[in-house]
Length: 241
Image (cartoon, rainbow, N blue to C red; front, side):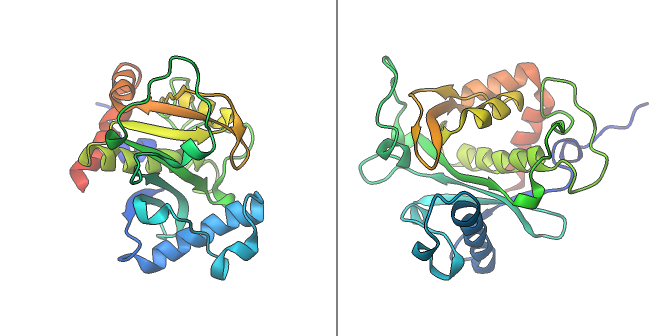
């Protein structure tokens, strides 16, 4: 009889995820802000370093967001993302930058939506060119990880972060995810079975990005058909919280 591979081992063998509560998890949230500074100020040049106090990046949306971290086996920060909730007038950050939508697009209720924001992976954990996603992360055949934590973890980190966002969304009545992202990231997410629908043309919003939306019920149906093991792993996070 073949051994049964635990879903955590299959989809995210080297990383664990958790929600970060800024007022409760002070040191970890400081690490999050430092990572955001490194990516947005030092690496990408999207923000001016002098605008960030103490080499930590933050903005007005942090207080109205749910924050999530991917941690390595040494409990060090490897990746981060946040879900921005609707503001007082039921809008999201992308509304301020992606102002034109395709004809016929009808946006879902803001009260059941959130925007994926500040998705990032620490520089030394990003995939090297030509490497494959982890086993089970794509409908294409992929090589199994060779056990080296630094070799090919970026898809694992993305899956870990998306799993945490999904668990939070299930628990808080969120059905729709917005995201302003580059086409290359949209393609990667599609290969990882997280297909988003583009709803507007590309614009300059921390680089050339376009607005996308995903219906979690549609994603669940797609995963149920293409990769039920991944869906079961995603859902198992809710049982752990």
